[in-house]
Amino acid sequence: MTISIRTSRPSDFPRTFEIWRSAVIATHDFLTPEDFATIEALVRDQYLPAAAFWIAADENDQALGFMGMSDAQIDSLFVHAQARGAGVGRSLIEHAMSLHPVLTVDVNEQNASGAGFYQRMGFDVVGRSPVDDAGRSYPLLHLKRG
Image (tube, rainbow, N blue to C red):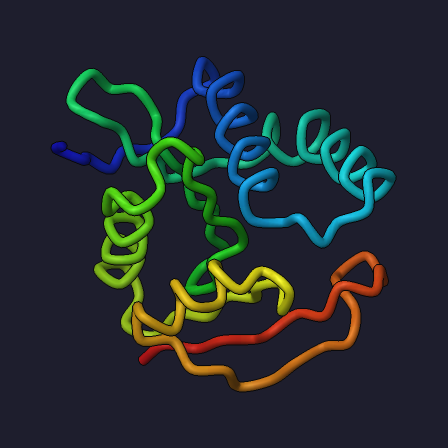
């Protein structure tokens, strides 16, 4: 599979929401149903429509994953559940590394596959918060590469 990286377009919104939802269902089984519903509404109604992303697309320009960044901080990285293990996340991280030699990211501590992915990509744990950014009891690992 050939993966290309491009900037997001408004027409990507339905697909990025589908990617987010499939990825979270596959990797965030620790979320309560109530928290999932709350986060899903925020992502759908506020975050995805307003943010710019890097899109990892296949040879038909179908988005397989996306990454949001604030300078050298990776704010979000999600890969469609059906595309996991195909190099989509790696392609997005390599793109981020081409933009910034030092990268940071936060990952839910309970998301073992996500934390393992970042560590395989050369990130080291440099800190931990007992709650997520919204104060929910989902600890975050703070990681840095470079």
